[in-house]
Length: 105
Image 1 (spheres, rainbow, N blue to C red):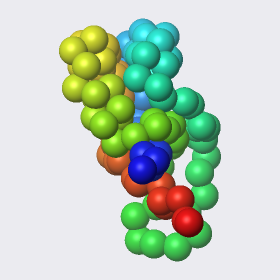
Image 2 (cartoon, helix red, strand yellow):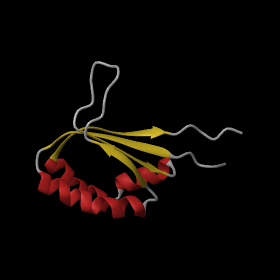
Image 3 (cartoon, rainbow, N blue to C red):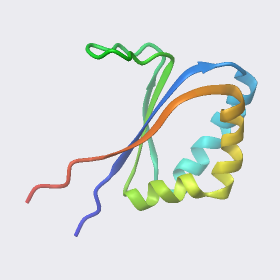
Image 4 (cartoon, rainbow, N blue to C red):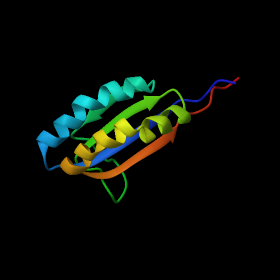
């Protein structure tokens, strides 16, 4: 059985301390790679076409090969230590794990 990839969708409504966030960004990519993750994209001007709560700020999307890999990344003590810089420098609206559609046979 093939594992189904998962995507992380992040919405930061504000970057209040760019220096703290830069520390986070610099350390983020090596930890993402360590857990098999891949950066997909980010957008500082996402457009909400429908809905009452439009996204504001930065939207980031990255993926992992499996839910287990994503959870291992998030639970990694090195990531949790690094994320303190994100927490200090941004307002996070959500960090959401979304399952990809399973392969069809």
